[in-house]
Image (cartoon, rainbow over all chains, first blue to last red; front, side, top):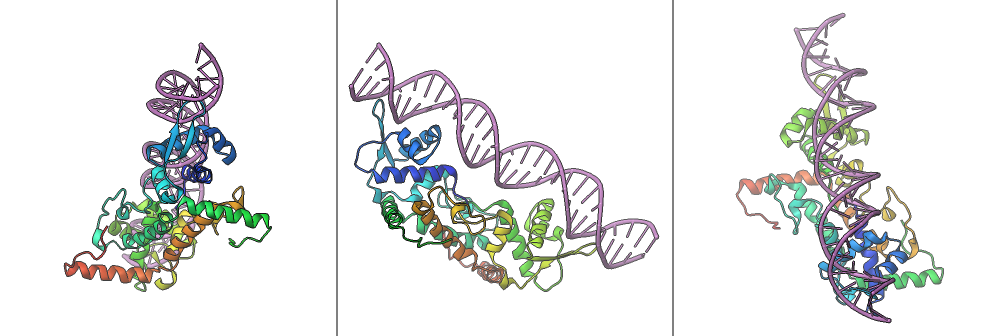
Length: 153
Length: 153
DNA sequence: TTAATGTCTACTAATACGGTAGATTTTGTG
DNA sequence: CACAAAATCTACCGTATTAGTAGACATTAA
């Protein structure tokens, strides 16, 4: 039930790019430095995201990456699926990599895991990077005003 | 975001034990045969569940395992945590294994993953093995009546 | 032409997962 | 008491996945 480092980095990079949407391309080096992501690792990640159609790239000197679409048209779910594959907790409830379990009809675990999958995707497939930017800005304002945290562990 | 084999087996074994609640102890061998779980692997799993206080055991000849509490007092979440550890998708939103992320206050990923964690635990921490037994029985009846599946991929 | 950038393929190290082995302890039964 | 059947405990092993690295190649601005 854990988010991979890869997806975590991908989300951070995408948020960074979303915060700079329509300001031209940003370079891998900038993102990796600011977000403290190993550069070579990030290269692979951004490449994957480009192939998945979420990023555009410009090669050569002064090249870089930018979002291929408006931030409100890219969801966290899309990013995580591109990097980690299916989100479903067991294959027999996955849309992406469905595989029947032995006794499908009577499999009660399956039915609960379906509920879990739906709960997860309800969050991840509705949350866009526009939302993330909004949250980030609000969070930053709270920090500047020295407000207490509104969400607590 | 995947349920481990260990947790999967644990849930199956617990359902099996819940279906036989208050009928005395069942032996590892029986459970492993009926649920097609490697016996030695299951031994470790049941041991973990016993140490976590969900099972009672009886050693020696004619020994075995039984639920330590009524099925409606054991949730799926409790079982999964015992075997796989924290359910939270990232440590900085985990109750079980909390570790602060670099820039906690402004970390928006954290806030979304908190939503995801809550969505997951809403399902897993409210679903008890009594519920599972009920679902299993219903599912079995549907099978016997040759009804069509009510939940579809 | 050159230096800075993304692209691609392949590799490596570390860790987690799934499972096994074997010796030990406990206990019901003859 | 002896024995066999059960849980207990500790340690190990092979494989897959994860996280990250290396290096050659392609493209482009200046």
